[in-house]
Image (cartoon, rainbow, N blue to C red; front, side, top):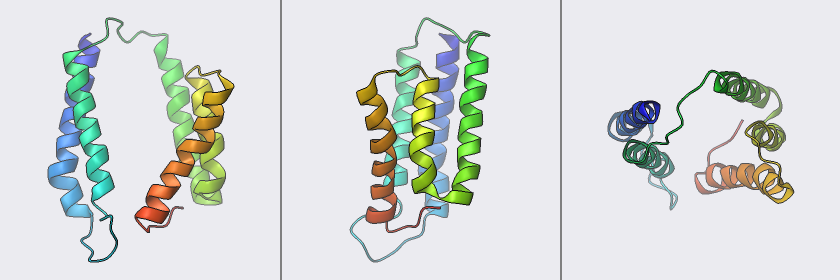
Length: 138
């Protein structure tokens, strides 16, 4: 329970920092397009903020155990490896298999969800970034 509250407070601080300082400082203002470059980062930051509030208000009884650390390390290693591979081969080639592997690591085994996650999530990211925001992906 305490771990969820600490994580929730961290997410609240991160979301606040992104909304009120980092995004206004880093995202450029443009006069074209119907979706501004700050819109999607603001939505994601607000999601982090409200997820943090939810974690603080409704913590889970199960705490962080030593058994969770190897799985977390594998998860982090896959993310870092995926980012490195994206710089070499590009988002469209690396993101679907990386999403599939991440879903398998966290325990998902239903074929429909694996297919939807491996195909749908990278596709949604590509549409949001490349089409709506008109920004290149690696």
